[in-house]
Length: 187
Image 1: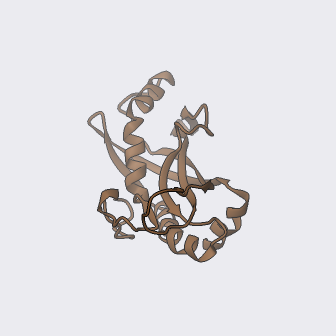
Image 2: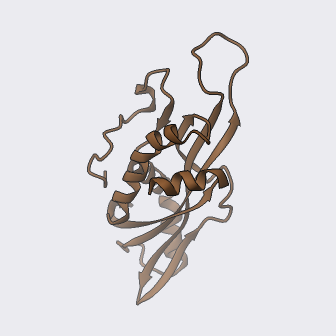
């Protein structure tokens, strides 16, 4: 990973106990997965801009973060453990990927439907009320620390047999109005 094991979070969601209040992925691992899923789009983007498909980067990736309440998710039947009735989701979208070539920034990918569920990558799902500051802080603080560590890092990924470098710019434009203060407060 590119955050040097900062969080120490387990790799698999299935490794978590059933009564866990939140399930999440490491931020760097989620970004790697999202970028690898886009390998074909990245290579096609290079070709469409008449750039060498052996281009190594750096690729600049703009990420939009979103954090919003999902409302009532409780089950009204069954006899399972008591859990909060509301959920909050933290996710990200790869908005654009660009490269610098001959001193010009060239965009090789841009998300056409940035608000679509199809391009939104879930990072953390919490069983909590969005107004519960203490719970949100406890769950989101490590995630914010991972993001901060990645701001100055470079990720090298092997795509089409070539090591390519990626750097990240994070934008928090998708926060629910009530959560803006919570997330900004963590920073």
